[in-house]
Amino acid sequence: MAEPIKILCSVGKSADRPVLLGFAPAKLLHAHSFADVLNEDTGVGYQRRFNSQHSQDFRRYIRQCGASTIPLTLNLRPQESGWQVVDLENGQARLEIEPAAGKIMAQVDCQHRLGHLGDLDISLPFMCYIGLSLKEEMEVFSTINSKAKGLSTSLLDFHDAHLAGDLAKDRPELFIALHLNNDSESPWCRQLDLGGDSTSGMARRASLRTMQKAIKRFLNATRMLKTRSPERAAQTVLAFWKAVSEVLPDQWSNSRKHVLNKGVGVYALMDIAADLYKEASDVTKVDKGYFVNTLTDFAHDVDWTSGGRLKGLGGEAGVREAVSYIRDIRKRRHLKVVNNG
Image (tube, rainbow, N blue to C red; front, side, top):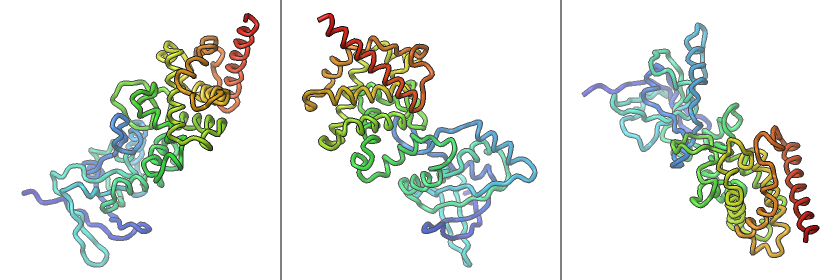
């Protein structure tokens, strides 16, 4: 039987967590570690999607004379076999890895540094947690990367959803946005970009962060949660978007040429949804049918094309302009109906 790979390490603590500190060739760390990238189709994993260019940049840098890096952050997953930590004297330990153990360490904070180093013998420092659970590992990742440039805010929101004790109560806008993305009857089902990878082949239309911010506008405008539960609010928002996709099927399905399910369109439509909800004579009867009827009266008069009236609008000012435009269309449509009547 082949001898295990042996890495001499120092044993210590990173705040309240025991860790190993050591050095090893890049290709060895690459061979026995993995990035737990979020699979948006299954909900498994938690890290950002791999950026090959970012990793290539680091490969070019680390091979230069005088290059260096801070320690890679890893975690020895407790459920993985093929490894053991042998305690030695004087604060030392030996990490032993069976040659056939495979990828036993999660790349908590180093996936882009290690990504393209699988063939290099360059010595790299590492800090390795010992046996963090998946939830604990996710918490560490989120803490390290909460301010990281380029890290998807939607991915951080996804982490919050998994770490929250009572998501519906603590972050109702996020609870509702995830409901839109997860409900099989939702027109948004698996179409919100969470910041991970997807093999479904479906085009992502808006980000999770965009949707939850738009929903927060709706909740603030309607003050719905003062009298209704987050679950009921989720059903109302779902009913609205089902109505949008039913009233405007061509604009919904052809997202490349229309803006109603991207950026400014999402924000504007959630503001319009708030208008419709507040105007209802009986909010207990606000359902898809109600939204279909009210949207049918004016939605087809709005130019939803990406090259039309809403072209180039962005930011808070752009949203205000878009909402004003849609409200004006609706007002003029209503006056026309009244006058003709």
